Image (cartoon, rainbow, N blue to C red):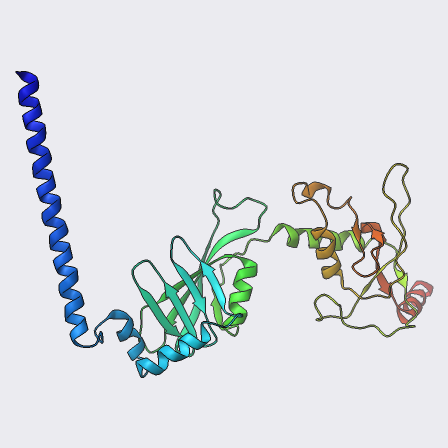
Length: 300
């Protein structure tokens, strides 16, 4: 008898639950249908996306412009969770979320770096990655602010360049240095203690082949002592073509990522002649004018 009444009570409760779910889903379906019917009567001019675009001009022209720019290979893109993403073209910021799309014209926006956050679970301590939030606000208040989140200082610099460098940075913002950036600093400290290479200006110094920003200032010259049982470094006969930062980055890229504590004792190949070199073989240039000034100073 007990099991009979229990079974009847369970079946009755299940039926009531099915009725509630059916009524709820029917109500949602009717509301969605009514909303679509209402906005379709005005050719979807009341839709949030159309309203957003209409604030910047004729919707058809604006949509055509965005469609053309969105195909550019050089657009800045960030993928978020699910279908969410952000795309920055030459003229527009497009943020796609699960239920909406926001358009913000770059010429109508001001940008501010609002915060940086470290995430101990998502990012390894030595990865140099952190969450960096940049807020884009409409100057004319035509649309809601858009938050642009990137995940490293390199991504932020790329974003900043895409926006023309017009990003306000709050004074108390602290960026996290990557493992490679920290290694470059230590690498430079070590090569400053190496013997200088007397460069006789036989060939005119050219900009660094890596960054093209500063003049080449190092020469790979074998000064280390060979050790028995180890891979031997070789003399590099290339003219000076690299700066200290670029040769440090090249050296770091050839090391084992899992053992950063062994990077300084490692070896890498010259990017042009493939001669092996170590940290002791990276010599700063010393021109004749510097040598004469040094000797004059010593005599004095």
